Image (cartoon, rainbow, N blue to C red; front, side, top):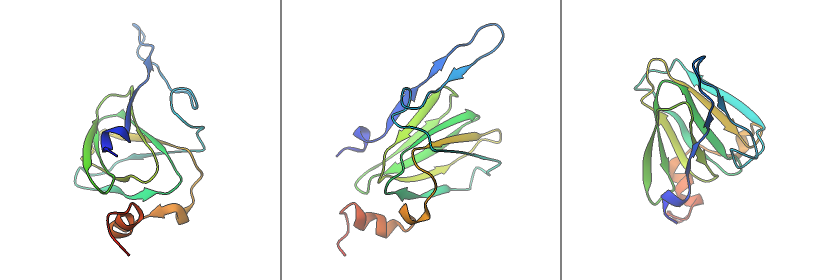
Length: 139
């Protein structure tokens, strides 16, 4: 399957007026799952690479609510780099995609919505193990 058919760019409602902007994101409506966990990444140097894992059960939506960052998504066969540069833009990532987040601007706040509670056993943190999981490498 083409990687372009796996991730999805989401555009959220921006209810801006002369008072400022309000972006609305609703679980199971604007994103394709019920939100069970929320975390955010900030204060990362541009050279730092976060993520570096895939998940067997958890889906994610990533939103740079401030600043910018890049996300490299990899399905084992091909990869794509997506720049998160608008607070009303989200990146939906299904299961079994390797993800690296990097090139954080100084003011970057990367908000992450997750479909599952944290469970370290469903994380694949070794890239070669990920390649085996998706069928690129043989055991």
